[in-house]
Length: 111
Image (cartoon, rainbow, N blue to C red):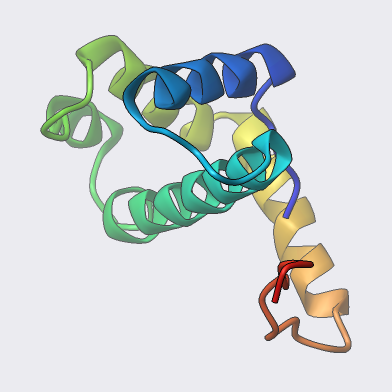
């Protein structure tokens, strides 16, 4: 899965996590986990809220709890834009080209 978040956003998220938790894993491990969780979150949002056959106006009004209105509106407008539709087509095409499904999780070198 491609990551669309900038490296500075990942570093900022990592710094926020380090302020709150004593980590015993590498920074790259945390960034990879954050990327996976972010991708899962976007997938869930898309399935639950963007794929529904409702008007753009109603989607814009249905701001999710814990999300700022401008962030929600940006996400909805992007998904309904030509660029968002093109990206979804590319993602769908790439998924269809996969011959093997990756089912194993990454393994720690310490195991």
